[in-house]
Image (tube, rainbow, N blue to C red; front, side, top):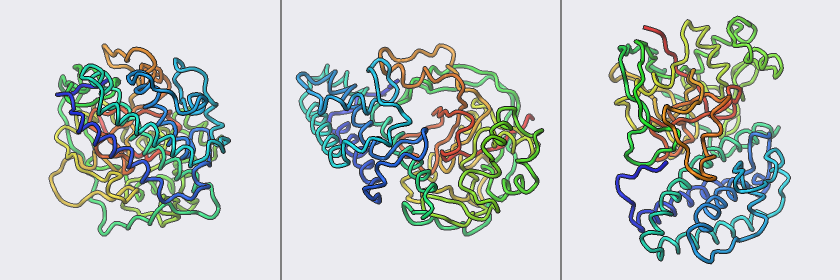
Length: 422
């Protein structure tokens, strides 16, 4: 899972550890005490649980394995804050995490401080062999925490949207100052391509091994679909036309009463955001779509979703800059005007659904032990997303990153980019 070019120094790893952990705490600064406990649906988790779970990861997979004599902070925390690691024992039901009024937020903060102190002590004093063994898992734990930083924000957004008072996490994002540029097509020739992580730097196990794949000629849009474009689909009766939808998607439309993206009002005028209720900016990428909605829109538009191989090939040479969580906007931004006719916004703003089922690459091998459960056991019933979002830490994402969610998931910052056969 870790492919370092060179082992990080103690000082560099300690600095990164402090920075990532401090970022999680900083994301919680706008919260009131009551905000830490609420769980608005089974797929979401309370902010307090995110704080504790990411701490438990370092305690369970680093300190208990690499620091002789370490004793757990509290005996029952392993049961409360294990997420899905069967090898680590029984755990509290996911859908009932919002019932955990205890431990208190203050106790969870003490837990974080306790684990941080012990882990930094380990980095200071471990011998070279123990440090080398621990460093890879620490780096995994930091990327794991960055995943939970994004989940923390999306889960809070869902909780605030369920509140009739329409609370805001932060200031509303500024509206676009200019229209989004026209969506143009970029042609990509057919050929045998290599996709997957190249072995330099960090990657999750599901990004490897790098392998050849034949990609037919295709065209891909220069930017994600905007709110204006998606509203046209809504107004054209897109949610009432069964022929546009996959069977499971149409069942979800009827059973759950979908008529627009999550958080939109029925007129397509206002949506709920981390900045509170806000007028929908027609120039911004549409977000909070399920894969079913993205697929139906693409069919309505006479196009399709790209495969993940097409997406990765098209992203070659794409700028690594983008609208990530560090911008403070916490909302998708309109595509910039001008520049070459090439795919833009490939990284940041919205995760882009692909038409690819989440499956192992040829030769995939999960890690041994409990950490092997991190990705591999979810390779069924999920769809791949690419590119990161406006809530993703910039240092966490890369072109080969394979995010995955069930096709009906809508509460993440998910949108789409169109593709066509050439």
